Image (spheres, rainbow, N blue to C red):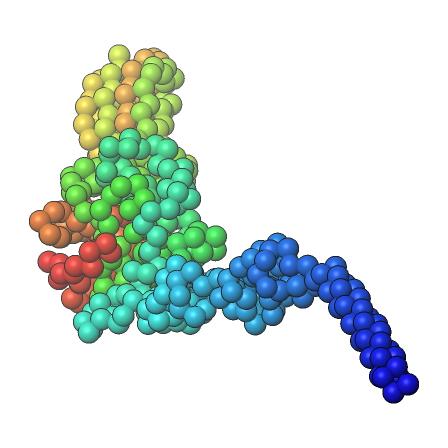
Length: 433
């Protein structure tokens, strides 16, 4: 009995063990199968696809800032606005104004020069290190406003030069200068570099200070290939142009001044009258003007040649007012049939009267009269007032935009004091004599 009971117990224990082992084995296989079915790592980087932000990229699995670039690649893993820092300066390419320059990252004034190199980081008109040269410091703001190579200014200049050959330097200089003189208002203002205009602004506004107009002239001249400079005095800044011939310059400017005088006077400065005329007995032939000189004309000269088949009396009258008739006694010739001469310096618009004293016969007259008017501008604006300077071995003239309608290139009668010219390209400067 006792041994039988032991056997039964052993059998029961064995059976129970088998059941437990079977249950354990069955449970383990099922769990392993379930685990195998639930764990997927597509890219094999050790991160379950369910937690891998880049399940197909074995090099990435986290994107902390959610910008689509994995933390391993993202130079700024916690900044959704930046992913790269090409120049390695610690500022992302998106925010870096100079993504390829590790020395620069910001440009506060937008002038294209980084704040680290920009000595004026909040002034878009300048950036270079201030010079220790006092004159260069004075000149720099003006030089920075020049625009020496601009297609718009070049096209504008060409429209002004329609009457000049491109190779005629003097014609081009005079045309540009006269255009500024006649079409722009010169504003009286002290020398002040804080209010300077660009050439484009001056063209748009059609006005500016002496400095603004000089900057415009210098820029226009440079844009058509002429050598121009700026000249500084104690009170103003002017333009200067080099490589000019004084005689050629005066010839072309004199013609433009005479055209202006004609326009104001309303008549040609040279008037030729010729033909034939019959003068009845005790009647006269009159060649007179019908207006005053009005300050535009200084005097008039008359060159005359007359031929008549009867003797005539020739009177020169100083005015067109014939009531009362007052001839000039020294210019009175009686009983002439032919006469040639010149009547000088009539200071009013007078002329010639030919009188037929014969009480019976008609006189037949052939006449040739040339009226020449001398403009008043010659008293002030003439060739003797054209000043030529020696600038680095070449002839150069100043362009003063303040002298009025009859000014011309090289007229600088009102410019006093030491004149210092500076080359806008090399910044070399010299006192001009």
